[in-house]
Image (cartoon, rainbow, N blue to C red):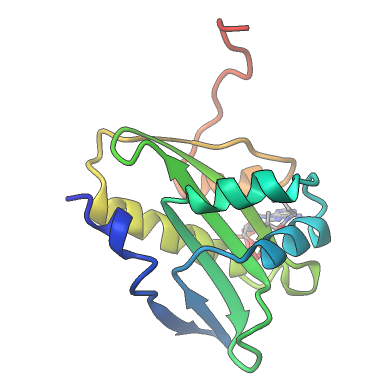
Length: 150
Ligand SMILES: CC(C)(COP(=O)(O)OP(=O)(O)OC[C@H]1O[C@@H](n2cnc3c(N)ncnc32)[C@H](O)[C@@H]1OP(=O)(O)O)[C@@H](O)C(=O)NCCC(=O)NCCS
């Protein structure tokens, strides 16, 4: 059931969609830091990011088909591989926002989860600002922002 956790990076899938190519693979450190910066996400220590990226369960990258090395969108799932998952690093370069790239990333992440992980899973995410509207379209609902744990 969970073989994909180990095999996905060895067999990246590429799919074309509206002038973009979607690849199932983890961003390089350089791409990761650069897309986070370009989209206004917080800075991550490069060494910590290297560790974090290596622990990715599943990730999607999107590039214009005419310029495959230029990654303009990414999304990543981390977690325990069976029960609990966290969707992170949703980012689309400002020059490509508003064209459905974010939706494409969400669709790919959701399909992969639906195919490979039992529906008893819990997927969490922290939503910034307007991204809420995107996540709602994929079944996410707002929950408490407070925790009983310090
Ligand atoms: C959030 C983000 C990934 C969306 O990517 P995108 O490619 O622009 O999104 P899409 O074009 O696929 O739009 C998807 C939906 O998101 C919503 N949405 C996204 N950004 C929005 C905005 N700024 N204002 C209003 N709605 C927005 C809309 O509901 C839209 O659906 P609709 O077209 O049916 O109205 C992108 O704006 C981004 O990288 N933002 C900066 C980084 C960030 O905040 N990441 C999320 C952290 S939680």
